[in-house]
Length: 146
Image (tube, rainbow, N blue to C red; front, side):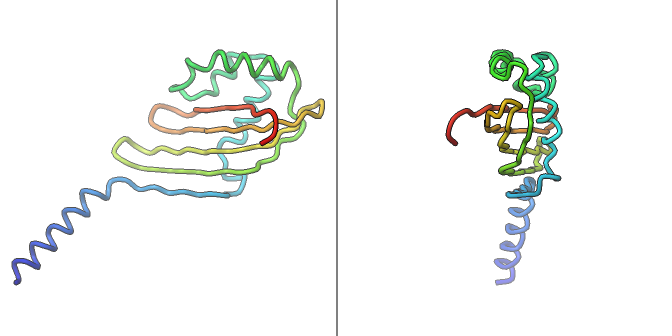
């Protein structure tokens, strides 16, 4: 009986040590001050409004920077010099995970943006920080009803 209990305890400890290499933390509805992306979003919108494609591309995550040229051009053409008048955070979801590949932090942030001419658009943003770098993995202007 002692051998069975000892073997069971050894297996539980072994199983626990092999599965405890990934820790995940989710924060939904966090306050705006915790959003690492907020100042970057403002700078990205300014670069897009001023048609500075190289500066806007510099804000993109290294994984998506090469594929973003066409989208940056489209967003700049839509904004065509119109700058942000107000920007209101509508939702935020922060996910931090640590594993064998390092620490990854993802911020999914949504804003309601009013442009200088009164047009209202929504922004859906995914700001990614990992061992490859930091930047926007996704930056979307949403037009119409949301």
